[in-house]
Image (cartoon, rainbow, N blue to C red):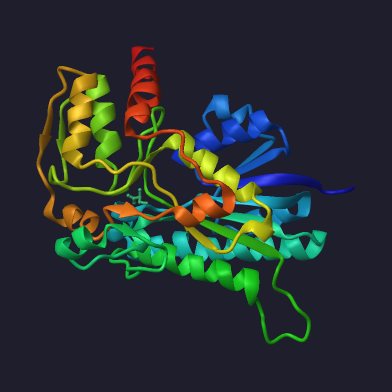
Amino acid sequence: MLRKPVVLITGASGEIGHGLITSLAAAGDRPIITLDLKLLEPDLGSLVHQHYSGSILDQDLLDSIVSEYEVDLIFHLAALLSTRSEFTPMTAHRVNVEGTMRLLEFAQKQGESHGRPVVFLYPSSIAAYGLPDLETKAAAGRVGENEWTKPTTMYGCNKLYCEHMGRYYAKRYKQLAPETLSGKVDFRALRFPGLISAVTVPSGGTSDYAPEMLHAAAQGTSYACFVRPDTRIPFMAMPDGVEAALRLAAAPRSALQHTVYNVGAFNPSAEEFRALVTEAFPGADVSFRPDVKRQGIVDTWPADVDDSAARADWGYAPQYDLTRAFWEYLVPTIRRRYQQ
Ligand code: SER
């Protein structure tokens, strides 16, 4: 029996997976296969062809997917985020690096067996950057992909290394073998800023203060923000994050001059974000109680990113600036969510 061409999403029950499954199902190009430690929420589960509950480190599970399906597109979303990874660096390395290596190997095997390159969409992060101090951060402004790539967190190290590993699989895999084996994995990475969703809340990240503040205010609970009011990093509304992943995955290979692309949309300070939150939810009780150590991480991330390569090569064009994100997406959707 012929295997069926499908798209595979790992970490599918996380924040990005939520929007991605919905968009991919609406497009209807290929059946969706998902893999996550957790079950999918029922409304998402009904959109996918098959969900595998388990770990990306489970080789038998990956092998059973290879034997049943012809995967030609992978969104490898499974990861431990930056705060969580600091508490368990070895586990972070296993999941973030070894897990990615297994998925790259999986993609390689798939590509070898069906003969077409497997598009491998990898969400990297602003955590791949590491600015040494606030003066440098202020002077650096919009950081380009090749500047300041000295990450200070386990997660950032993992993400940066996996970008390199993806490039290796795409261009140099087993380069000393007599036959050419590279080119089976068509690796494409996005360096996401903090993502803000109206329908899910993040867990274990260090950019979480913005979405946490918003979701707390919408629910009428108080929130103590763990970074200083002047803290500034780039953010993006989740629909633009999902659209960016889909667009980069669909871009013609010949248009892509780079392996890794910055994407950004807006970069309010925590205080500017708080002002909007309290305007939208007037009784909101938001205070600032910086956690020196988590602050230390955010201070090494750029205040803004230069995403001109993404705009030029594959037409990245976020729909939501801060004002639109707030008033046309976040606030109305969150209101509906918590009124239910
Ligand atoms: N949102 C991520 C984190 O905070 C950064 O990419 O870990």
